[in-house]
Amino acid sequence: MSGKLIEIRWHGRGGQGAVTSAELVAQAAINEGKYAQAFPSFTPERRGAPVLAFNRINAEEPIRSRAEVYRPDIVIILDATLLGILDVTSGLKDGGTVIINTKKSVEQIRAEFGINGRVATVDASRIAQEAGIPAVNTTMIGALIKATNVITFEGIKEPLERRFARVAERNLKAMERAYQETVIRE
Image (cartoon, rainbow, N blue to C red):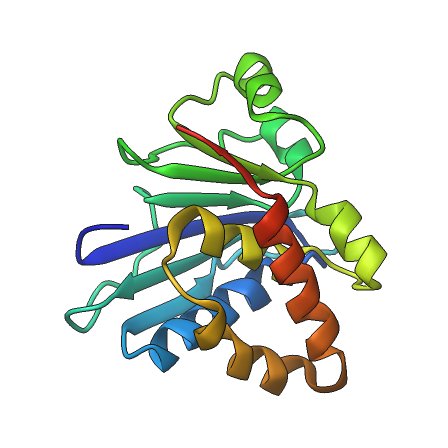
């Protein structure tokens, strides 16, 4: 990704770990010497309800803004059913990237939902289930790394181990597998 400031918007459902993912990505960016922030949107959330979380990452200077991200460079969708009920790509910058947890191909997603530009897909639900992980959040970080290089595996290891301790290795393996299986189309 080029440019100083990178803004990410996470779309998920309560219980899927969107907020945790944003926090892990920010910690990884900080470990890599970047400035970063992570925060959720402040709405009453309940398990299964749509949830938003955000990241800002800047390799060059501190981040002053504390507002929600309305013009993201990257949109990450943890639950593809949200594509049919929300305008998840609203405000996506030209040249931005959409990363979706889905069984569908990029071509199917484009045809069904009219998403153009750079799209990455991965079946993170299957990968997480096969790895014995209850949520897709960390698996989707592997797709984020492949599609954008905004953080690295080296940077994410320590926050992942700190957050998940005894199941960190399982999460890391799922991330690596998602990295391998993510399909990207320009």
